[in-house]
Image (cartoon, rainbow, N blue to C red):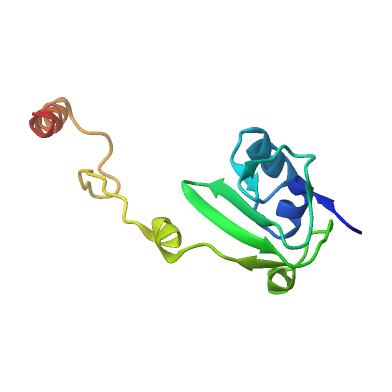
Length: 127
């Protein structure tokens, strides 16, 4: 086998959970082969460098071997070398800053008076 479709390859090396997700990423210009946007039917060869944007992280891979069949996670390093920089991987663990009011479990919905207090609190943050 000289080449494999990019959507099949990305699915096989477990970048995307389903082949449909891989195809949609390709069609949405979130996948590149050697710096060029790739449609789902584009062929991947050994030695190509792939970039795939997924959840605001730009993953980079080098193709070591080809496969059309999905494999276990332990076998992926034989087929693709992960070249993703550490600063991109750090985006996965970035703290999500959210503000919420703690309520005891089982107290139900806020009363009208509590709701007005919550609204006043939110409005103070907007200013």
